[in-house]
Amino acid sequence: MGQLLDRAAIFAAKDIKTERVPVPEWGGDVLVRGLTGTQRDDYEASLVVTKGSNREMNLKNARAKLIIRSVVTEDGKPMFTEGDLEALGGKAAAALERIFTVARRLSGLSEEDVDELVKPSGEIPKEASVLGGSTSS
Image (cartoon, rainbow, N blue to C red; front, side, top):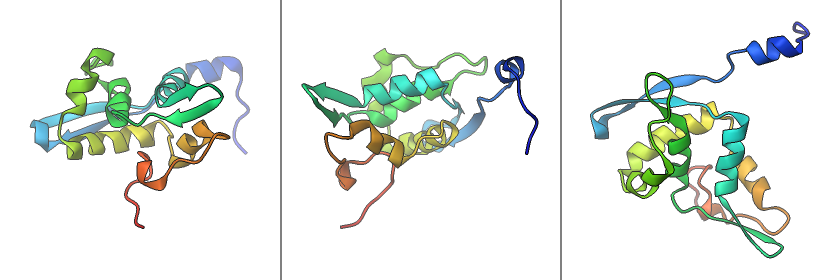
């Protein structure tokens, strides 16, 4: 077992990782930072639409939504704003997927996490999943 932590140790921990990701389509690299708990909750909420007592997935620009929350400048400030969503979503899918994959890993997001967002109102169709990669029928 590890050392028993106290409150001060937890708040002092540098627990959010950053990774440099090459994006040859854009001619360079970007810095991707894992989400905080609050940012992850915000991202997950942006993927769910509530209609009465039903919850449904809204996958429009799901990759760009995560990238907006994850890509930072060298001084750690967000590079993009919510106003960049449509323009960023219009960039090359391969570039977005590469950044999204790293952001998802650094933030501890899995396909199962997204599946949980829509329960108990229904399952996400496999072909609609943004977190699981390709599927076959």
